[in-house]
Length: 130
Image (cartoon, rainbow, N blue to C red; front, side):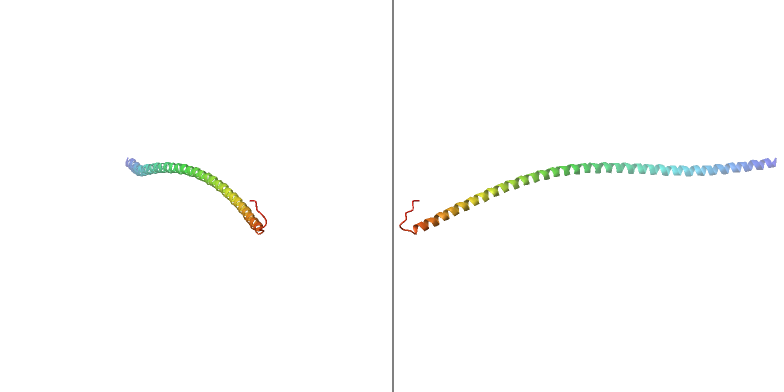
């Protein structure tokens, strides 16, 4: 009967050792689970912050795009006004050049008439009717 007790004691020791090992493994698993849960919570918080930052950046991008569109429209309007002004200035310049050409023509005619008058006056016997 002594042999049976030793076998029972050995079995009890083995069972106790197995329980201790299992309890230690369970504690390590629970500790690992706690670490994993904490990491998941931290990652969830980071994800939430990143989503908020993404939304804010997307809003800023949308505003910048709208502002860019508005500036493009203003630029187009300014270019159209500048083109119109350029056309108006060219028309005024052409009119001024035409007026200057007419003035030169009239001045030349007056000069020719003056020279003709002086020439005709040089003949005292000739009468000028104009």
